[in-house]
Length: 336
Image (cartoon, rainbow, N blue to C red; front, side):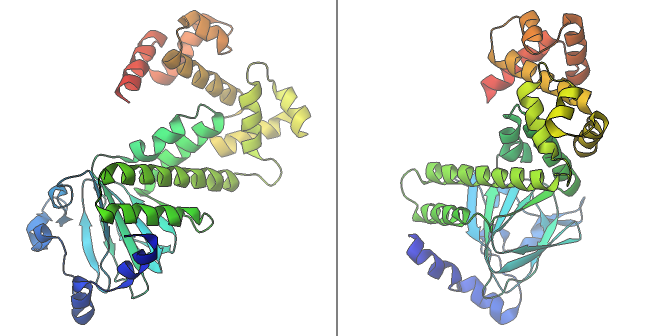
């Protein structure tokens, strides 16, 4: 299969869609799920789809969502990503209505109930199921690798939103290259050639990186102040954290120190002094993980004038001494 034949394949009704169009009733195209009520979760009072129905030979499962009938409210203990290839889609997450349009990526966390309204003839929804992933492994790792203040702010904002909603929506209409990447991934998946899983995985990683780029841009724009761009202030602190003062920021941005500090507090939750400390701790943690410097040397390089103050701040933030934190970070690094 190639891109030139992909659309015809997706839009041509399959046998299950033909039956659903005639009856309006949902018929599952996975044999193991034919008797769907056999998978009723009494504790949650909802259908729970088992992993075994999807992940027989791979930890990645792709499919087209069959049109013309609703999908019953259900849950599962794996990550689900829906991509609106064409048209639109309406879902309900824990009873909340979510409207998705062409180009939308809908990422649903594990164990979250959702239902899907019937898709129309011009609606194409792609299902991407991931067996061995979590929200953190999919997205936060990419943000947390960035030791900048903006990266830390985005990581915290993403975590807060994901925990609150249990899902994320990404609009890719302004990034048409992503649609091409999805097409290439689908063609590779359904070609079933040698090393298909490897290539599909690489396409998916590229797509996820594109989604995080969109998240960065949207979140940064959303948190721009009409008078003072807090993201620009964070970037400036990133580059001058070792010697920066509030007076320096006053001269650079032509606003009072109090206004700058209060704006940072409003947007990031941290004032100027707390932001500078956050940056120093990010640098210190990175050095503990990646360098052979002694702890005293790391304290100095990170901008801490007092080793004892460095120890106290590390312990306060991570609940570990610098030595134990280094050991933990190195262990995590070797596992990753």
